[in-house]
Length: 91
Image: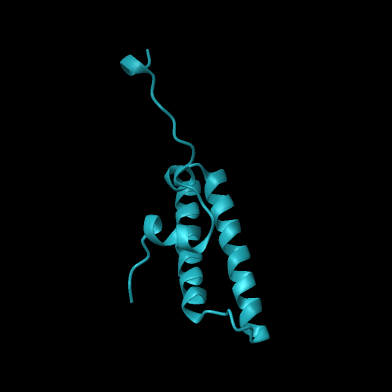
C-alpha cells in the first residue's frame, strides 16, 4: 500500500488549490477536511446505491486522506498559533 502524499493525492480527491495546499492555517485545514468529508459521503452514497461510477479505490483513498488530514489539523491545533518573536530579542 502506498503512503499518503498530500501534494500528490489531495488534488485528485478534492478540489483544492496549490495555495490551499501550502497554507498551514487551521481554517484552511478545516475547509480541506470538510471537502473530504463531503466527497467521502458522496462516494459512500454511490456505493450503497450500486451506482456504476462507484470506485472502491477512490473510497479507500478518500478514507486515508481524511484520516491524514484530520491528524494534520489536530497537530496544527495542538501547536497553537504561530507567533514571531520581535527582532532583537524583544526588549
